[in-house]
Image 1 (tube, rainbow, N blue to C red):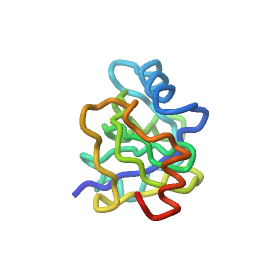
Image 2 (image 1 turned 120 degrees about the vertical axis):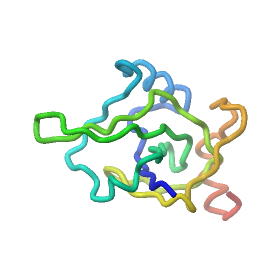
Image 3 (image 1 turned 60 degrees about the vertical axis):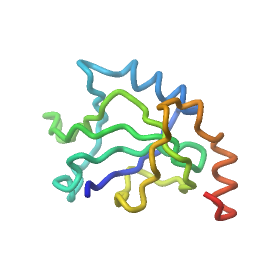
Length: 132
C-alpha cells in the first residue's frame, strides 16, 4: 500500500481555484513544489498522492510523480497537475507536510468533478460531529 502526504492548499480559495493553480503551474505535465527536506519514507510513496487540505478538510488529491533534488540544497516534490476530488474528511491545519497512511486516506469521489465536494466549512463541521 502506498504512503501519502497531506499539505495545506495555502492561498487557494477552494477546489476550483486549486485546480486552476495546479494546471497553470504545470510544466511538461508536472508541477514542481519546493520543499526543504526529502521525506525519510520517500521509498514508500511510489503510487501515493498529495492530499490537499483547505479550510479544515481534505478536499482532493494530486498523484505524486516523485522527488528530485533541485540543485539548490532543496527538493522538488513532483506531482501531476490535476485535482482528484475525494470524500471530504476533517483535517486540522499543519505546517509543511504530514504522512497519511492508505487506510486513513479518503476515497475518491465518482465522476471526478470538484463541484461534488462538500463546502469545506460543512465538511469541517460534519467531521467535528463525527459524521464524515
